[in-house]
Image 1 (cartoon, rainbow, N blue to C red):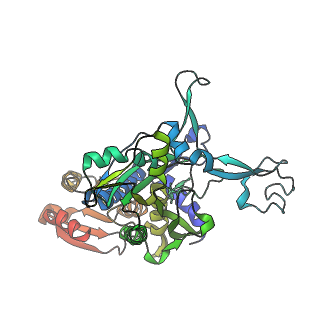
Image 2: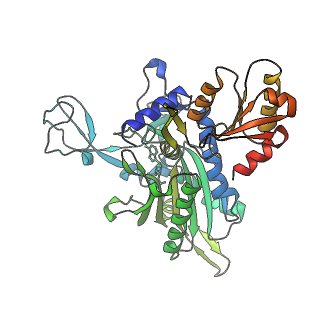
Image 3: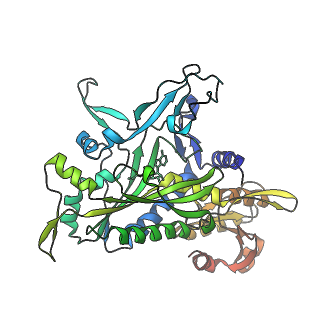
Length: 434
Ligand code: GAP
C-alpha cells in the first residue's frame, strides 16, 4: 500500500460516515477529527475490546475514570511542566514552524527555499487553561496530556477501596490533549486523542519480569484485533528516546504506508510518579505489604495505547482494492468484532412483504449484534456499500424466503453465499464470529 492510500482512507471515511474533519463548515480545525456514526461504533468496539481484555477479564486489574482537569501541581510533580517540551524553530521568511529535531537546520526551509531560521526554543506541549470566571486572575491548569496521572494521584483511594494486593493494575480510558507542533497522517498525530492506559503496580525489583509480560500481552491484543501480525513488531527504545519518567520502554509498532510507527508504549516507570506525588503533595503514597509488614512505594509498568491510532491501524490494515468481474471493489476486511455493522439485511425488492420480513430479521439480530436494514438501490450496489463499510455479513431476503423461510447469507471477504433458515441466522453469525 502506498502513501496515497492514506488519502484513499480519508476519502472512504468521509464517504461512509466514519470520520469528518472537525468544524468542517468553518473550514476545519487543524488536526482535529470528528467520528461519524460508523466511526463511533467501531471506536466503541475497540475500546470495549480493550476494557474487556485488560480490565474485566482479569482479577488483578480494576478501572477508574478521573477528571480531565486536575490540580496544576499534578503537572509540576509529574515533570510535565518542566520536561514535556519539543524544540521548535520558525522560518523567519515564510513563518513555517517545525520541530527542530525533525529538520536539518543547515539546509533551507523546504516550504520557501530560504535559509533564515530562528534559534531553536523549547515549546511546552500542554494546553493551558484558566479555572474561574476572570481569565487573568484564574488559576492556571492544563488539559491532561496523558490519562496516567489521574491514576497515580488516586493510587491510595483505589488501592484502599478495591483492596488489591501487589501486583495489580489500575486502568483508565479517556481523552488527552497535546499542542503538537507537527501533526498529520490523518488520525496518527492529533491534538486531541484518546488513550487506553494501564498502570501496573509491582514490587520493586520485579520490573523486568512484568515489562516482558505486558509486552507480550499487548502485542497479542493487537493480533487479536485482527491486525496482520507481520506488520506488527516490538521495538526497544534507545536510551536517548526515553521519556523523563522511564528507564526502559518498548513500542508496539505497525508498518504504516509512511513507515514503522508507534501504536503503544510499554514502559518501566519505576517509582518515579508515586515518589513525585509523595513529595509534592506531602501525603504518603505507600502500600502496606501484609507479607513483610512493611510500607513500600510500588514500582510501575505502564501500557499506554492510543485509541485513534489503533482505529487508524485497523482501517489501514483492512483496506483492500480488488478486481471483481472487471470492476474495482473497495472492501474493508475488518475483524467482525470491530466492524461498525455486523450484518446488513437486504430485501431483494421493496414489495411482496420482503421488507417486513427483513425488518423482523434486523430486530432479531439486534438482540446480539449491530444490524442495518437497506432497501435502496440494486442489490449489487447495496453489497458494495456494505463492503466499503466493512460489514462482514449480509442477509438477503428474496421470494424463496416467503415460500420456505430461508435467506442467503453472504460473506464479505469471499463473497460466497449460503442458504440458511431464518431461524438459524443468529446461531450462524455466532459460530462465525469468535
Ligand atoms: N502515559 C504515557 C504516554 O502518554 P506516550 O508514548 O506519549 O506515552 C502513548 O503516548 C500513546 O498515546 C502513543 O503510543 C499513541 O498511541 C498515543 N498518542 C500520543 N500522542 C498522540 C497524538 N498526538 N495523537 C494521537 N495519539 C497519540
